[in-house]
Image (cartoon, rainbow, N blue to C red; front, side):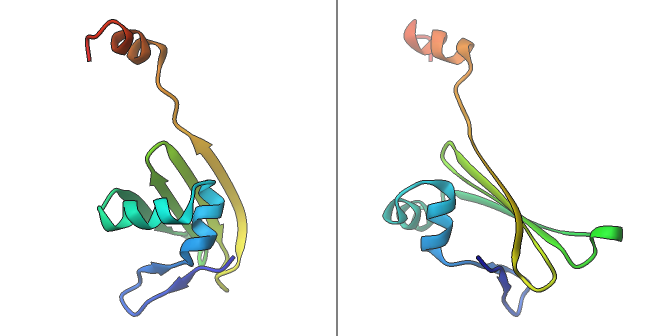
Length: 97
């Protein structure tokens, strides 16, 4: 997996690779993107992390974070899913939400 930056410094990544990393269907990813429901963040490294970039993407309850070297190659990644808290589930079951 590679991270490429466009002329404005925005990050570019293949949708099929991102969907695989998030463990969601590529069509769902594309639909959520079209609806503006993808949160993403690019952080550039400083100090000893100079040249590295960290990308965080959240689609619904699915999140993925990748760290890329100066050459754009993925060097570390982490994936997680947000779960409803017991309080939110209890409220929903009680019809409060």
